[in-house]
Length: 192
Image 1: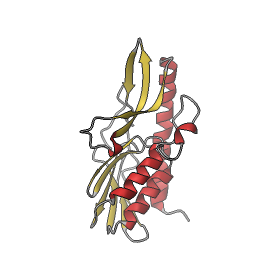
Image 2 (image 1 turned 30 degrees about the vertical axis):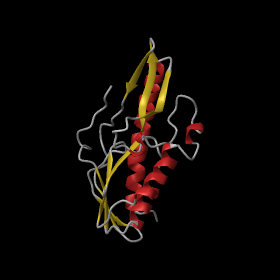
Image 3 (image 1 turned 120 degrees about the vertical axis):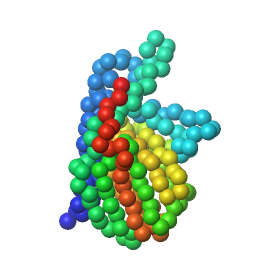
């Protein structure tokens, strides 16, 4: 039987990706040139992992770059899900797939495994950019920012496996508790 916390992740991911794909479809019809999940390298002062960020949608209009960012209007149900990883306890609070905060108690995130995870799910190592039809999301994360025991991550259109593989890293870190949350889940909206 699938644990409730995995069902909660599946629900959050499916909800987000469904409305993100609808939003992308609307923008594809609005802009003749453009597409989702366009990667940008950020300035050397950026705290984002690898200084890489995927914009939700980018189009060219009269030789001008137009960047559009999507924010879902709700997180998962406000019910808290509690479970257990192999070693650590897990708590999932209301969160948005595109603005998740994964917090460890009792340990810091191991930097190298998180960077390898990022490289894979961002598409640097896996060739994920080649799997989606043109104009459609490709199953990639959009950004991540690490501050010792706290990881902020925009999971973009990534599958649930992106989060479960991240939780495996968290579990191996020595943390006693892993919490997935988002302080903004109840008040995010779609931005154009």
